[in-house]
Length: 315
Image (spheres, rainbow, N blue to C red):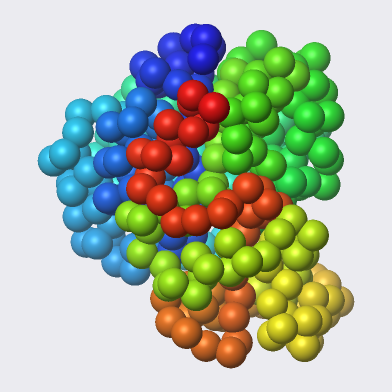
């Protein structure tokens, strides 16, 4: 793979970031990814306390001096955000990925410390805002992304962003093979953010049922549900998801109807959703929510993380 703005920015061998995945990303995965020549990030929300969060950063630092990132949810649905940002600054993580809100405060506090700030965007309009605030890179989240996906096909989104901005552009969504990475680079991306295929890594701590679902189901089985986080989320269409449906539940309908209480309701929905996802990810249950993107089409077995990276970089 050729060098790009992303490889130069992060001093990595390959223009790939192992995407931060809620409850999935763990220090062992981060270390293996960094050792394989790619970048990696994990969500601060994967850790219940600031002590646990700091311990995870220290564990990674004890194994490598390569830069890694932390994903922060920067809106008011995340009450831990202020403390998490403070920890990222104090620990001087390599880069921060902002999601679901304005990155202004993160940029103002992180960049003076030499911490790069990458911002998730789903369209050119929002990208313009974060670029004006001084983002170091933008992550275009396309319709094929796992988790909180966008509404524009990823190749179209990358072309739109490339036409407007000169800063590094990272493609997020629908990538599980080297050919797909090459396609995104050709479309104008300076790198790719890859998530779903790494859930099937041996180093990932989710349940065997979750990993088996990634193998058994295909892209056509991935649907969006509005019942988990307050925003549409991609999940595997298990029998339980089919039973309860994917349309807004009572709390979601209340949030949409009552603007006055929207922030409080969104926080309640997010907490409830996180708990449901956690129960599904780590224990066998009929009530399963397996978060994944359509790139499960390319998952055929559970493998060591380094083997997954080799396939992504060597074909």
